[in-house]
Image (cartoon, rainbow, N blue to C red; front, side, top):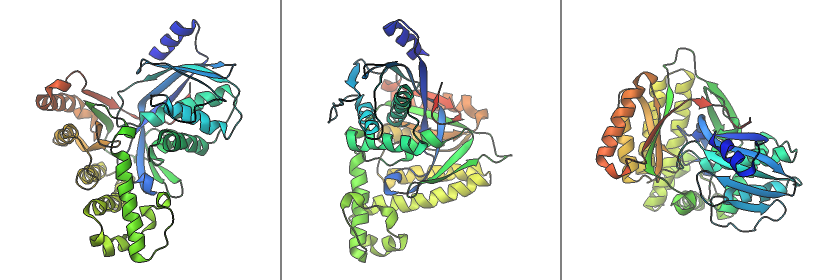
Length: 391
């Protein structure tokens, strides 16, 4: 791994250990976890590696192979506010971990991402890998739920992105060849094995060539819009409601939405429409997966992507074109934007027997439309994988 070589170059010794956290994809349940929705996910066999060793003086010193600037802070003196750079997620994680456990040791580390940034939850993956490493050098053994909560708090409260817990949960709970089915309202989850006899499948990742940053995208605006729909529906129907940030559409029955949806502004109605129909697609998809019907599962993914475009209203022209091209290919069960859907990538479930033709045809058609992205466009074929581990 390049991060090990870079560590040895900087520190003239081998790292003590390597933390790995996988990226994730969300086939169904997109844009609903922040409203306590039901979601699905896979971890994939690509992700974030951190080569690290303890620093007994309490200093955290990190370099990233993706960014030029190094970052440094002390475990007991973390800046109260974000510094607007790539290490903010990790500063926030240090601060959150320190409220739960005493921290004495820092780490020296080098971070390496195996794929470009955008759509695979690299922010959650690097945060969880970092938490794992920092816990290791301080002899802390947090539960899986604690790791998820610490990483989530760092992103929401320190960095300021209104995410739910889909990303962190996938990257902790997932297991290879199993679909994670998670209810973010009560954190109950099920790992559903691919039934024997189901058609062969792999996960295709198609990078548009456009990177994005959630903190500077319209992600938070979309969350506020769907929350506004929930707040208004509660008010119209006479339901009790409290603070705006504590209002979730999952608490509003679908029948209430149907009764009062015409009183909502069109934007709010569309956001709510996506939530309720996406919950139906999750249930439909889970049942299809359980019976081994990957074609029906893939069709639900396709319809999820259409709702993201029409109701959630995300997707650059590049991503829309890319998803359309992917869906036209033989051997594609289903495809949609991955992540927030503003830039980044598309994910697809594909038949491995068609992998070469899918890769060739999609690249050719996409770059014919957007030739300037030729140096940045990327296809990667992935397998599902286990969650966080220490090597």
